[in-house]
Image (cartoon, rainbow, N blue to C red; front, side):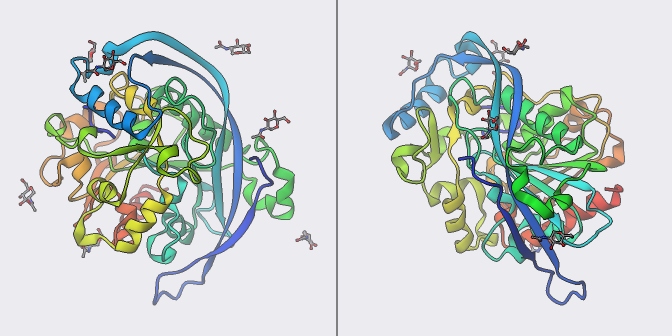
Length: 406
Ligand SMILES: *[C@@H]1O[C@H](CO)[C@@H](O)[C@H](O)[C@H]1NC(C)=O
Ligand SMILES: *[C@@H]1O[C@H](CO)[C@@H](O)[C@H](O)[C@H]1NC(C)=O
Ligand SMILES: *[C@@H]1O[C@H](CO)[C@@H](O)[C@H](O)[C@H]1NC(C)=O
Ligand SMILES: *[C@@H]1O[C@H](CO)[C@@H](O)[C@H](O)[C@H]1NC(C)=O
Ligand SMILES: *[C@@H]1O[C@H](CO)[C@@H](O)[C@H](O)[C@H]1NC(C)=O
Ligand SMILES: *[C@@H]1O[C@H](CO)[C@@H](O)[C@H](O)[C@H]1NC(C)=O
Ligand SMILES: *[C@@H]1O[C@H](CO)[C@@H](O)[C@H](O)[C@H]1NC(C)=O
């Protein structure tokens, strides 16, 4: 668990119109957010591996797995590979596409948001006090369109084999596949029930002029790896919860320091569809350790985090050693790392003074010096979008994009 991320029913399309509120005191007219829920089939060809590791079919197994993979002599997963798994399948991906109701100059810019481990697309669209916390609302208010999706094995997406299917190489191809579908203006037409959208479809059926990727944590990691083979399909990126730094090798907050429960045992109703190999962060204490800092912790958001948390597939952890952050020399767009100043997960609690410019430039040598930047959000933990000061952070993120013509 080393690396920069130390570990990190097909119904009708539903058309929902909600109000993205404007900041108090602002004279701007209120922007309405129009959203559709989509099921998008994405065809994936990728190479995964089968790893020799304990199976997880109970919460006792979940802890046993944790101990085994962190303390056993072969804690490096690469040494556990027993065979190659060629994936050539179509996976159904649950996504939400939101567009501003009024005409805006940025509506053609589509942001595609990938959540991190433990969360689904709700991470970006917080329902508690949304004018304060929802990133989607903040982006819609600035005029952008936003596609957020559930990673494979979470939320409204398909939940295939947690060991052999749900691995980093497949997740990279899903992100690239979704991005290409979006670029072609085919999000609606490739999604099964597009007719159900009827009149409003014209608003959703657009060919984006630009695409920007937003990631959180493991989602940022997938994004970065995607840029190796697909450097040209996006125009800019903001990676939250990912930070090129100099201490990652000694970071003690590995999977042994927080608890997983077998998803179906943890909540038999909510996680009924999650089979062998899917576990979930077991309680609010674990979520607090990983994602929050007291100075910016709203207890209502900690409870909310627990209510939206999503299971993680074992394959996401086991494929990490084989897929380290690596140079994406041909990516040339602007890129910001946006990180909580006191992120436990990636900085062992203090991100100040450890940004590694050399590491960042080694991974993204093609990005202009002024376009490769980082920002430390004060007093904030790993889940910056669930912190009390989240909206001020959105101003920084969206301001960065605007300053780069996005
Ligand atoms: C760890 O898991 C491997 C693979 O399932 C197994 O062969 C090994 O005996 C386990 N080690 C311990 C100490 O439980
Ligand atoms: C894991 O082992 C492989 C093969 O032995 C090696 O190339 C790689 O650097 C190791 N990774 C880590 C994180 O130790
Ligand atoms: C994927 O499967 C399809 C259908 O079986 C086949 O036509 C295609 O050649 C396969 N692609 C690869 C890369 O194996
Ligand atoms: C979409 O429709 C096709 C053809 O009817 C079907 O094979 C596929 O399973 C459907 N996908 C979903 C997500 O229902
Ligand atoms: C659909 O759009 C047409 C033309 O804009 C309008 O006359 C009609 O009332 C709309 N129907 C619905 C159900 O919104
Ligand atoms: C965080 O690290 C920086 C740089 O080493 C140091 O100046 C600062 O005092 C530290 N902050 C805290 C709260 O420990
Ligand atoms: C909130 O975030 C903004 C933007 O990063 C920052 O300027 C401000 O100092 C933060 N406020 C607090 C109380 O941390």
